[in-house]
Image (cartoon, rainbow, N blue to C red; front, side, top):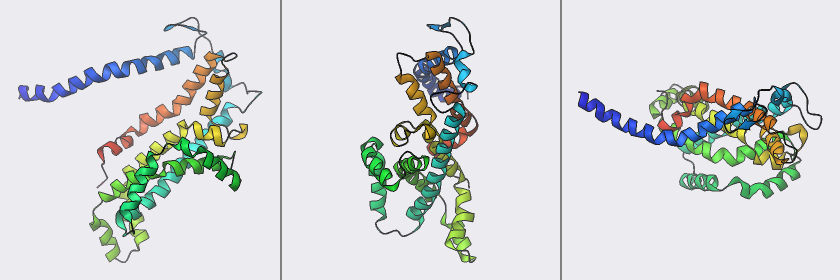
Length: 278
């Protein structure tokens, strides 16, 4: 009994020996960032003094740009709209590819992989011209649509895997009782794949919250600026940058992500385990 227990615990110990050297430098960097956000300066990991001035952006509006409240609202709206749009469209498209006799389904699935493999930066010029033609350039709606279009193939592919695991018995029982395909999908299938929908929504939200390139190129106006773009602008002014403020903004920017991981991490693990609620 003891021998078998030690045999099962040995791989876990080896995993810890491998993970600690990899994650420790990252944790130290975040610890340094947190200390620097409250200090006058850093000498290695030793703060030279403590101050609240780095966090003054919370109560002092920026005379040359949008305030932190507007930036946070823009970023939050962008991330939420991206998550809602991607989950809504992906849940319907994935259902069709999984359950309906779609002509050329294998071709569609292959195209999903190919589209997801292309870097989004290769389409920036095309997206810029398209949004300008539609009158959506430098708007939050335009950059949201661009983000959804670029990431939709990934979420369709993921949710199709969840639909494939749902037994036909649940859906057929509803159809035999007289329910329409839409009602059967809504009331029988969606509750079963709810963990997958939540995982997809969380990933989409985090991806939208951290997106820098698309808002930077497609929505450069101050009225629709997001936190990643604002943080990038602070770093770009190397000659006049206040690095204490930069570190404080970076810590403020990380707080929502940490909260999401803290409370919703069980949904993120669903994508790796492939589980559905039965």
